Length: 295
Image 1: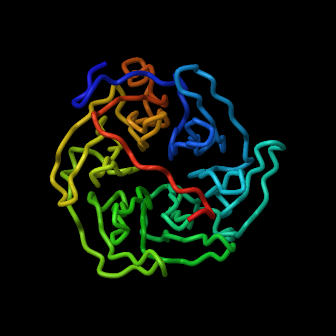
Image 2: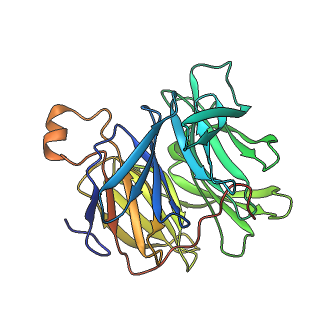
């Protein structure tokens, strides 16, 4: 398989419905990822094909490691805590639980251990979703409204800018960010994308402050410098690319997730590894992933 910035390899032939929200757990040396509609939270040990999963009993948009050793979930009904030893899922805070047409989607932790995750309508058509922030003390704050498909999140290396993707806007927005108070201000679009690239989806940041964005329907991950200029393109053998995260011992492996939901039988034939996890070394390292509750 060819890639614009290194050779793309198959890390796990998962063939998930919607593999999403990869995050590297440096303490365990494992990649955490979810299969959203199946409600499965996976742990993959690279180079071994060892992948185990826990069923949350409801759809899960994202899972992040916590300082406690548990996992915090952005699930259909809100923020949840998963005890992996027992498989028990408990509620931290309900989010839009009285609106069955909504679910939580992608999420990430900031440098202070706060978990940010958004909601979307199941069909992703109307701007009725929100972006929420879960603080370590369990407080939930609605940060943004009017979101359609709340997706990628990242923070600049100096912690003064938050990057955010609402997929149908075909761009990346920035906010001035106060790391101490978590306050956002001065929203603007960093860069826009042509529709033929597909919908921007999940996102991560590297050690230079460059953003890496997955494009749903576009079959690529594209990198952008802090000014929003395109710097690299990684081509995948699947069309529905969902997200990406740096991992591995030296954080130089870029793990890329994908989906197969909605593909026709013919498309599945030409994309047999749709829904799998891929890996590429793009020649740059990522940054350490913050844990929930651990600044």
